[in-house]
Length: 608
Image 1 (cartoon, rainbow, N blue to C red):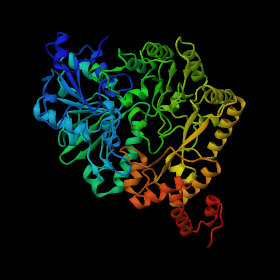
Image 2 (tube, one colour):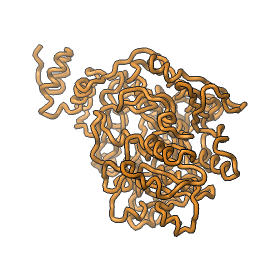
Image 3 (cartoon, helix red, strand yellow):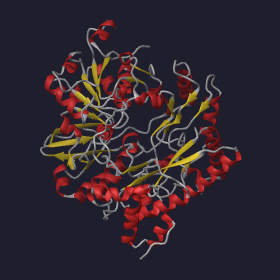
Image 4 (cartoon, one colour):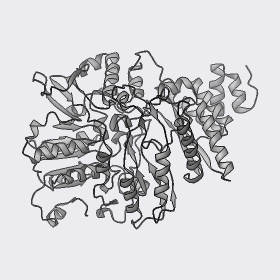
C-alpha cells in the first residue's frame, strides 16, 4: 500500500509518464474512508486508472498548483471537501470562522468559498478541452436551483455556475466505477449521458439523451423560481421524493436560460457488497506524509472511529444526509467492519479506545422495511416521522451482536458511541415484543458500557408544533428516555450526564416556543451547552421554508425568525440562567403576557 501521489516527483517515483485523472481537493489529503477525496481517489484507482491528488491548491497566485501535474488523459475531478465549504467557513450569523478542521493546524483560508466553482473555472480556463467532473456534498446540495443563505439569493444548479462538464450527486463510488470503466473501453466522455447519479448541462433545444426506461419530470425553470417562491418550493417536494426512492426511475430536467440541466436518477439502494467495496479499498488511514508534525483536527476526531452504515431514514427537516446519502440504510458486513477495527489497532496512535462505532445515526445498523416491496413504492421522506412506520424493523439485536464481536478484538479496551442516538426508535410502541426487548437491551448496553461520561442526544426542541415541522418526535419521548438513562445509571452506580442538543430560530419557532423550551429544560435541571442557531443549507425542507415562507409539502405559510434581532431574541432563552440575559428575558415574557413563565424561570412573582 502507498498514498496516492500528490506531486510531480511522487508521480515519477511510481514510474508513471502520464496521469489518467487528476483530483483537486478542498481538504488536506487524509487517506481515510471518512474523507471524500480519499474515497474518490481510491475508487478511481480501483478501476485500474492512474490518479493523483492535488490537495488545497493555491487559487490566488500564478496557479502553479493547477499546472504542476499537467493535463490528465481522461478528466479532472473536483472534490470540494467532506464538509460544505460555506458551513465550514461561516457561522449562522454569516461571520467568518477563524479555523478549518480539514486543514493542517486548523488554519483558515486554505480553500476558497465554493471550491467547486473556483477550481473548475480555473481548470476550464487553463485546459478548456479537458472535461471537469465535480462531486461531493457541495455539488449534491446544489444540483438544482437552490437558495444560498450566504448571498441571500437563489442560484442555479452549480453545474451552470462552475462550467463543469458533469456533476456527480450522492455517494459517488458506483458512478465513478461505471464512468471510468466506460472511458477505459474508449467510450468518449461526451457519450456518458445516461450514467445514473450524474447531472449534465446541454442546449435547451437539443433532444434529451435516450433512455426508454426513465420517465422525465420537468421542474419549474430557474427563471420561474426567481419570480415565484411557490413554484420554487414546489420543486423541492419533487426533488426530495424522487431522490429518496428505493430506485430512481425518473430524470429531472430544469431549464436555465437557453440551457437545460438534466439530473439522472439514482442507483438502487446499495447492496452490502457494494457498501463494503468503498470501505475496503486500500487506505493508509493516515494523513499524507507531507503533513508530518502537523495536526489536522478533523483527522484527530475520526482516526479511531468506524462507520458501520450509510443513509438515514430520520428525514430531519434541517438535515442534508438523505439528500446526499439517501433515506434507506445500507449497512456494511460484520466482516468488513471487524477488519477495519483490526487495522485501527495496528496504528501507532492506537491506545485501545474506539471513539465511535456508528454513522449518520448510531442505531440504524441493519434496520429497514420488513416488506421491501412496500419500501420500493414508498415516497415518505422519513420512516419515523411523524410516526414510526409499522413496516420498519427496529430490532437492535444485530447492532448489539456487532458491539460484542468488536469488543472481543485483541487490543480493543473500550467502545464509545459518538454518533447521535435516535431514542424514539427505542420507545417504538408499534414494535414487536422481540424488538421492544432488543430496545431495552440496547439502551442498557449503550448507557452502561459505551458512554464516555456524557451521552449526546438531539431532541432539538421541546414544543410539538416546532418538532412537527422539524420532523422530530414529541418531547414527551425525551422525558421517557431520560428516565431510562437515570435508572440505568443508578443501577450501575454511574454518574453520567445526558447532553441534549437544541436549535433556535428554526422555521415555525416563535419567541413563545423558546420561552417554553427555557422553562422545560430548567425543570429538567439542564444548563444548555449544545445549542445552535438554525443555518439554512441548500436541499433541506427547513431552508425552503426559510426562503419561500411556505412549507413545500402543504404550501401553507410558516413563520420564521430571520432578522439578527429576531434570531438573538430566540437564542437568549437558551441562557436564561445567565445574569446578563435576565432583564431582557423578563421584558420579552411580560410583553408576550407570559407572566407565569417569568415566575417559573426566575422563581419570583411577576408584576403585571
